[in-house]
Length: 125
Image (cartoon, rainbow, N blue to C red; front, side, top):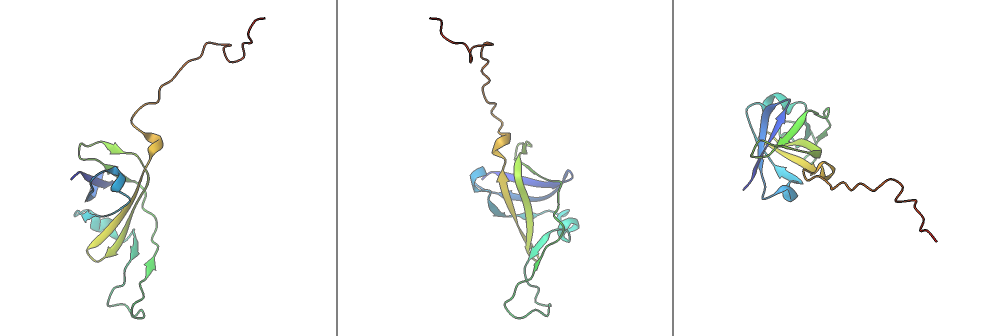
């Protein structure tokens, strides 16, 4: 199964696996040691048992959005994304939300040059 790496300012913080780019929408990640330095800056969706919240209520803390996240494929190529967000879901778990930037596709579009005046030329009578 293909494996991707999430980096923050060039430092690998997490890895994830999915069958292909199409399945990267929301995926559980495996955190790497550097992830702990980021944890407090990420959005969190979970209830700590030590909190005084009402039973069954999850807290939703919106921390500052972490920019400078990048997604790299297993060959070391940058994967262009329009969304790359990591959300902490528990003391030892997190999920990433990925949207691949199809506008930055690696396949170049063909360029066709029309001769000057071809579009406005009128047929001669």
